[in-house]
Each structure stands twice: as C-alpha cells, then as structure tokens.
Length: 160
Image 1: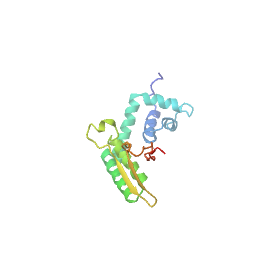
Image 2: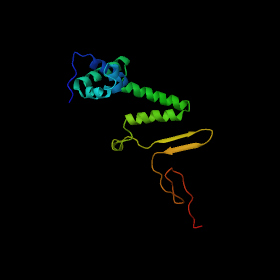
Image 3: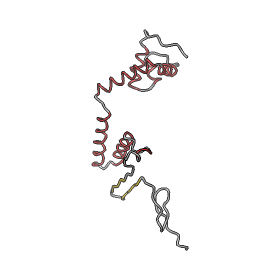
Image 4: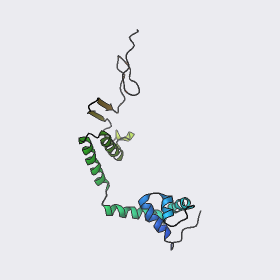
C-alpha cells in the first residue's frame, strides 16, 4: 500500500475540497497539484484513506448546510416541479420527477407491497394525436385474443 500522504502537504486537502465539488477523482487530483500522469492513481490512493473520506464528508455537509438543502426540501421542490410540468403538459418531465420521487420513497421495491405502499400506477393523458394509457401491472389475457409484450391485443383466431 502506498505511504500515507504527508499531513503537512496541503495537496490532499486541496484534493478533498475539489473532489467534494466535482466528484471526479482524477480531475481533482490534477487540479490539486498531482502529476497529470499519476492523477488517477493518486485519487484512488487518497480516496481509500479514512481521514480523506472524513474531510470530503465534512466539506459536503458544510456545502449542504450553506445551501440549506435537506432531503425533505428537495422532495417538496421535485413535487412542485412535477405539478408545474403536468400543468404545462410536459409529461416527460413530470414522469421523470415522479420516478425520482418513487425511487427516493422506495415505491418500486418488492417489499413496498408488504409495507402497504401502493404499487399500481395509472397515467392517462390525451394530446391532439392519441390517447395513451399505461398500466404498470401485467395485462391479463382476454378470452377473444392475446396480449403481446407491448400490451396490444392480437386478433383472435376463429379457425379461419
């Protein structure tokens, strides 16, 4: 294992400060003064060190506190943006926002049903060209035909 960085060498602190912002180890190492050729290796070495991890975590927490970001504030903002996107009929943006909320609230995980969280999602909207209905549950096979993998019904074979 490579030797521990010299605590008097300010480059590892510069690395932490830059990495906390850009989240790119090689870029942070290079900007902190390490050789361009060894920046990636230096970043890997530094990111294994407990004191470097702790410093990065402290700096990230400081940035969040300074920006006054909390998980609940971000979720409230995503909900508001989803509603605005729906009102503007930007359904792709609204769906992405709802997907982010569902991911954060762990609605898509198998245990969610055990916890009583709803899993069935219906999204219906109409534009000038068509009406689309998407259901996340698997479609049942009707008596007069089968459903293909994309949910469309095939014609029943009546022996002709």
